[in-house]
Image (tube, rainbow, N blue to C red; front, top):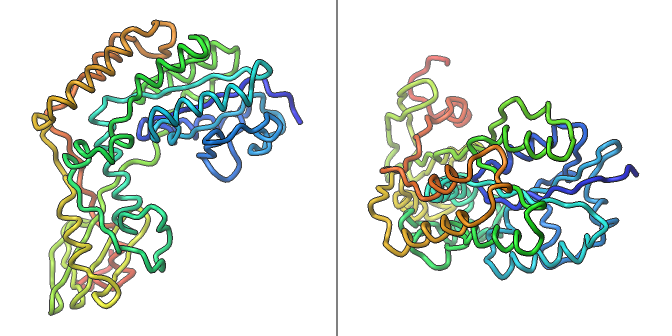
Amino acid sequence: MNKVNLVIINMGLARTGTTSLHRYMENNKGVSVPTNIKEIKAFLNKTPTFDFYKKKFDFSSAKVLFESSPPYMHLGLDVFENVLSNIETSFGNEVDFNFIFSLRPVLNRAFSHYWHEIGSHYAIFGRRWLVKEKDDPKRFNETFNYSFGDVLNGKSFKNNYLPEYASMIEKTYLKFGQDKVKVIVSSNIESGVSNIFNSKGLDSNNFLKKIRVNQAIFPNYLISGERATLIQVDTSHGPKLVKLPKNSLFISTKHGAELISDGSFDIKKVYNASVAWERKYNTDLVSESIKHFINEQANILDRLPEDIFYGCDKGDVVSNQRFSPETLAIKPSGIPIEHLQEFNLLEDPEKY
């Protein structure tokens, strides 16, 4: 097996370009990413030996291993500190390892996280994360009917939407030193990654091309009543008439589409959950406690050394973390025409 010169662990946060960063690394011949799965979460409650850790990667000529596991930062400060201890125990002084922390303005990131979870899970399976298959009997037993304001203010959602990210970065810096900590920003991943690789004497040429993946998508729900319902909806080919069978719910997401009946699920309950999802959020509604949290985290970043910020200016990063746009919004996506054709729901007969 080839000698590994460096291990890079992308700690997160979710919705800050972690998947894009994974793709950058995957496209570089000098880097190996985990086999078959992006988030191996190797150090959650584990202290693998380095030999065991390497088995999670499939490589021949790569000298760098790259892992991206946002859950490290989304399970609370105590879990995060345990992860750092596990890494220290596993690697010791025998392995050169670096941490990457990717940042994005706090509320923008949280809103993107909110809609990503809706589009990737809640809209398809309901609130239970253990439900992963459409034929699971627990599917839609619990629905996610929370607004963005609800999750910002709910204690049970804190680690997902408002994690103590700057405190985690500071703890990593205090434990391992500034040479092992790299902070980049999602809006300029290319420059950040190039600077990190150049600092290690590694080839960064493959990181010059922009890669953006895994965007949050607005899921569409259409419901009928006791009679077949004719509805005009926005599609990828403009407004079209859609005819739904009676007592049915049509769900269209980036993962595909489905037509379900009232006999299978309580479709009114499922549909009503979607009504609560907040498409637009006025940031003037943010509570004083959340404003204090955002400012507190920015203050922690501000006391970190300039040298850990790669491809970005520390002052700009700190200012951006405090910044909140007047309105957060997700752009509605038209239903792909092929989703409607699949279920023969188009009322007009023309082909598209």
